[in-house]
Amino acid sequence: MKWIEYTSINYDILKRAERILDIIFPEDFKNVVLQYNGGYPVPNKFCLLGNDEVFNNLISFNENEYDNVYEILEDLEGRLRRGIIPFGEDPFGNLLCFDFLNNKSIVFWNHEIDVSSSSEVTFVADNFTEFLEMLHE
Image 1 (cartoon, rainbow, N blue to C red):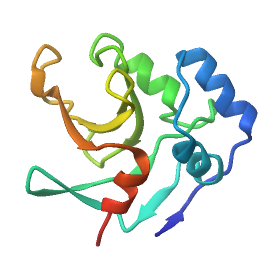
Image 2 (image 1 turned 180 degrees about the vertical axis):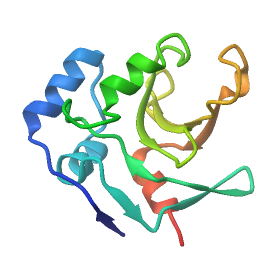
Image 3 (image 1 turned 135 degrees about the vertical axis):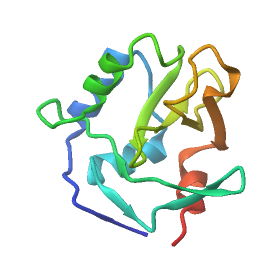
Image 4 (image 1 turned 30 degrees about the vertical axis):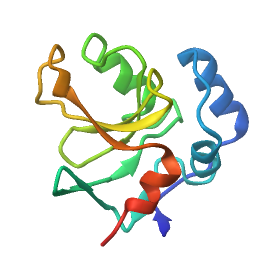
């Protein structure tokens, strides 16, 4: 697997995000995002409920970049349930997220489904490494 169009960030930026969000990201995710912040994975498809979905890019932790994690969370305030923290996007406005209330598993958040629906998030993988291993052409 490789990443394109990325910027690295320093550990302080990530620690600040953890403080603001009151969470601790998994180590496997930290190792990737420190080097490939905002990057696009190749390959980028994964199977969800029998369909191919696209992991377009990692969400940036740089506050001065467009569509950073803070802007996304602000825009979606009241729509994402507690414990759901986005880390990636598809090309259509849906998000890949950590579910911090469920062992930091990876879930797919569908922006077209009502927030009160239990199907607003769909389980994808047990952890970030397992998710990356699912990616294919």
